[in-house]
Length: 606
Ligand code: G6P
Image (cartoon, rainbow, N blue to C red; front, side):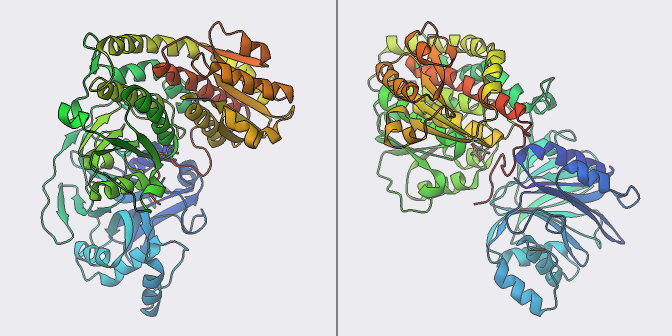
């Protein structure tokens, strides 16, 4: 989604901004721009499409300067074109904005009466005119006054040519991070943008404002009170956000899974006691035993991980679970009874619907546990307790390694709760010993990538695809379908296999590929019947089966095997071929796998 980069100091600002914007490309955007501030005014260049288009448009002389702000825009209000892209300007003020100004229409009418002329169709442009209108020599004061009258969410960076080395930032709802450097300081919406420059960062919270000059940074609030913030050190490596020889980030991340799954469980297993230790959850055994109901809040792939969690928690910990789309949960009046634990699942920790759903659940008295990947993200900071999944930076927009790490953590949490009620130590030990083997088993699935690619070649031109699974493989069917539609733009649907006959069976013909996840478990016998129903109608069957399977394999046009494992771990294996299938199909179709059209990595607007 939209990205912000700002720098003030001794460096060539345009260069730093372009480098930062390129590091934010993965988040999804459709236009980009930058403004370098000099005493003679704002020097703005904006362009539709990729950063390379913006780069091509830059005039070297015009871009000389050491203070500036840049932006990647993901269109909400107004088409993705150069005029609507940020920075927006009014007089000597330039502004970039993530989020949505909800009362922009009313403000626009008033500003219009005061003589302001608008260039774009955006909500953002209203804010820059408002700041310009309120500016009487003190930029901070003008921003503070303006923010008092705007409704909505924002992360902003503002400059003024009267103060050519000053950047003013403010956050309400959209993340902002300050990079503290030597001689230069940075402001960004995501640490990835500035980690080539500095590893010392300050995460801003809602309500925080900041001023940056080459000499230092100052954090305060809208009432001008100083807010003391801690400087934190980024521990991960720049390599983590580079492709490392792979053609795409998505492929790299799929292949990292043996390692990332290991990173998720490392140090958390007490195999002999059949138990699990999750450092960040701060709940006593008494509190854990008194969890009466779990509500999982999430969006997208994280929601699918939550559905896997529902199966696991109900089966092995015997606690009732509901998995809610965060966007729906936040707008109805959810019932939170005593003893309710909300698991808030978000790779980025910034998805606005998930964040707001979490805040609503908190208001209603639920205990909140965040399960996130990005250290220091808003959900991580606002949760009462939580677990990091430790998957490392995920750059591909289509989530892969974060999903398997989320499922790993949900399974560990299941064992932790299970051991406090019905699960025996022996069973816990068996499960955890088996988990230690999982990275190797995932590697065995990855080794079939070429085989899966050949299957992809057969189906890359199709326009529809159905995914079927039962039990814990039903959410895997949903996730497989989501992966395919996200990056290949093929229409795909996931269904519980038995539900097929209540509708989708009407679609089955020789042109309909059907991916069936039919691993050896309690529902195997039933799914054989469902596969026969597809075969009887000449649908094309691609099956994901357990090694040694003959029955479903005999009915299938293509077979992908996964090693045998315990049911609790099956999803970690069965999802991998589906990630690879989607990946290879998208590559064959020539699509931009890492930055699929219209999608964003972290959706920070409603
Ligand atoms: C976006 C991404 C998805 C992701 C979803 C939830 O839609 O494109 O890949 O699953 O947001 O993101 P989160 O960071 O909250 O897990």
